[in-house]
Length: 363
Image (tube, rainbow, N blue to C red):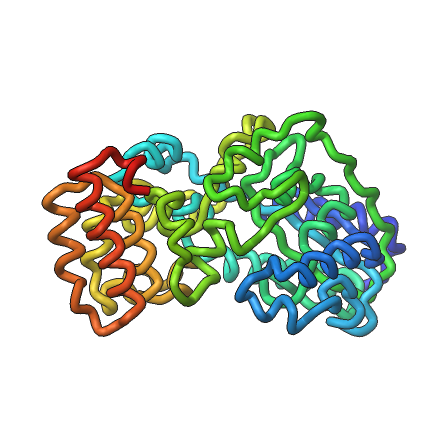
């Protein structure tokens, strides 16, 4: 067993270890989250988690790290940049109603495995340095309040859109955690630097940011296209535009993202299957087998082919009433899935209305 360093020394060494593994920042947080727990309680009580039943199932344990991993006294939090610099400009894709918009984080390989492997390597390095210790690695894999923990670890502040923002890196990054029984010195929380800016609030297409630091997931396009398994409420469909997987609008308008850094990891830098600006009709034609094959290794695969088609049908209905769009929808009109048929019929009705009236009148 290696000689055990003092915890102050180990904390300093963490910066170098994390950097060598590709993380752009690392910090250590204490585990007291009383105010965040109260906020979580109010959010759940208001039903703002929608159909994300796992949020209610885990309840307030999410704000109590030692309940998830007994013995936890600190959380090591890390950041990993993901902005795909080589991708088609996000604003240009959003402006082209015939193209599919995929949230920038999902254009490369699935970040879960990338980050989990790197975090495990970080834990292994710590163990090689000090010997066995208690820990558990998380990357969206358990009930974790990752943004409050990252804030308390000094990695950034929670913006009014409820995403974490760093002065030197904007918000285009992933977060991951190691819950540990090592009483490392905790870093200080970062104060907010949003000031009077509220650009993210009116930028939300569906009004999901109901007030500063207040998000109603039931209205959020990321929730509607990824988490919701059933029918997308009709009131939100026209507002979704061509966004078929997630939404980045609140981040695209954030002034701090002028400091965003391009992804360094090759699996996050590379755009897969031209998803940065693919034609909606092309993606809608994918068979289930093609979807499974092409989305293997992608975060998108978890929504499945049915939701993929549901989302694209809505986008086609919001797009130009071309012969190609209509033919694509007609080809799915008799699909075995009632969910897909419902959204295809809605989209075809939208295209019909767009031919005889201005788009605004058809909404």
